[in-house]
Amino acid sequence: MLLSAAPLAAQDGAQAGLVIVHGDGSVTTQCVAFAEESITGAELLVRSGLDVAMEASSMGATICRLDGEGCGYPQESCFCQCEGSSCIYWSYWRLGDEGWTYSNLGAGNSTVRDGDVDGWRWGEGTVERAEEPPALTFEEVCTTEKEELTTESAEGTEVSAGASVTLIITPVTDPHPTELRPATDPGSDTAAVSGQAVSAPQASSGIKPVAVLGVVLGLAVVVPLAALAAALLRRREKGNRA
Image 1 (tube, helix red, strand yellow):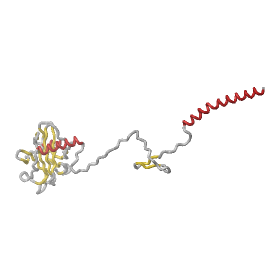
Image 2: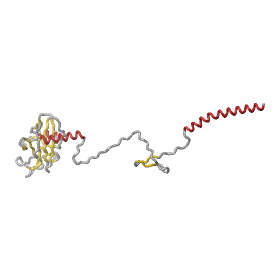
Image 3: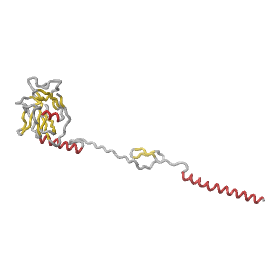
């Protein structure tokens, strides 16, 4: 039976911790929230969002692969590394007042309540010889993850110490920019301003509209006066002849 689930972040309500110890000694912790009064150890693994492959049998749920390490069930045996003289498997542990205790119950039959911590370790061993997970309390597992969740929610992105952060500022473009009128060389067509080519002012050519209007108005006055003067002159010449 292959199981997977989306990660469930720590939140208000019942919570239980997970401590996963890999064969190379690296440790993964998870804080899992649930609404029920209790769940099984197998359900705790599934709700953690970690990669889990388990085999269901009459003895309960057997963990074959966890967080990317273990046996690739069902393509291979769930105890693929426990078929000879040595036996490497995922040992199951419960955290109590006296520390870690090897669980004689399978994860499908165990009861997990608010404040509990389950431990899993990939390695060689038996009930008497299996090495227990490192000493971690519920507060160390869940309180730390709550603080990280709060930081990520407030900042948007978690930034680790010493990380390089690049801040990109996009300038706001003024929809009505002020016109640039740089001083230019009379023999130059353009002038460079802040790395950009800005067209130099061009000399105006032709008659300005105001001048044209003056000419038109002048003609409108002069032409009738000239016609009137010519008519008076012709009358005077006729009178002299008479």
